[in-house]
Image (cartoon, rainbow, N blue to C red; front, side):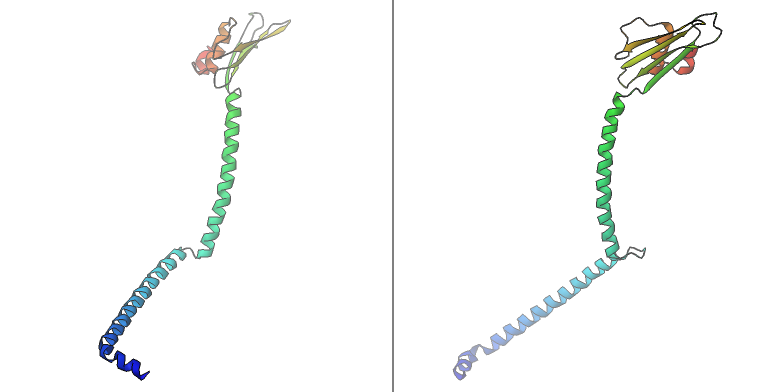
Length: 172
């Protein structure tokens, strides 16, 4: 051991200065890490304090609940898409015209009813009321037109169902 000290003796001053420099560097690094840790703790504390008395665990629980809400929302969107497909095929456009088919009946007991989907496909149901009998006719409609000849009242009902004429104007 004595030989080791005699061997290091000429390098003792630079070695001590190097170790002091290393200690100074480690001390500065420790202070920087301490300051960074305090800064991060402050950020975490501000994140956890929502101002409503909730802590971070409650906030994380809300995020978990949001996942369940998102799943329910996805299921609802699928259901709405299914309903939209069904709605496009449903009879959603209606036009009704009441009229007096025969002068001896005395009131507007006859009618023409147009029932169409969004594309203008559907039917026109016409009922002609007389004192002794009632007749009912159905005429198909495709793309807003019928291949059968339509009466004036059926034309008006079709125009109302297609939105070409307001119901008030078609009744006159």
